[in-house]
Length: 231
Image (cartoon, rainbow, N blue to C red):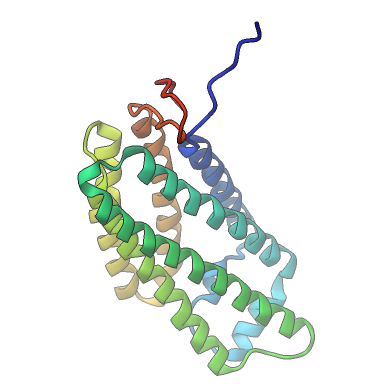
């Protein structure tokens, strides 16, 4: 009789690994070329902004392509992580946290296509207006702030049952508040370093989640028997 392997019911670890890989590629592209999304998330003079869009459109499109994949991965990761580790007593708060994080995803999608629309515009002889750039700044910074709320609330939901999850909870709560406040208070010249720190924080968070969730047996799919297998 043919043996049947248990069906995977949890994708938290594969999603964390895939999100880390995507983020590392984006960071590497930025380090090599100097091109970054964050350059277009703050107000600058329209001629400077347009020149930045024209400077390396191939790399910029590649970054937004990778970011499109990344936002799918991190959204799915947080949904799976909540399902995997959040205790029943924290489920209501977890739902609110996830709602904020899904709001972050929506704003991230709008942001990507807003900047890409301006890139297409400059390639067709239409530079972005001051109003478009102002709106982009408002959109991007609102996106980050919505994300900060979601990450902080998610950190409050996490169990402190092992060292990795305790460290992840600290990063998502204290780390998020400190980083968010610092980035908004810092001068513009410090923003590249702050953005790099945010990327590193994401990498550390995904890395901590991997050992953190392994102490929790995956929850079985509806109607399936629990196997106790680890992801």
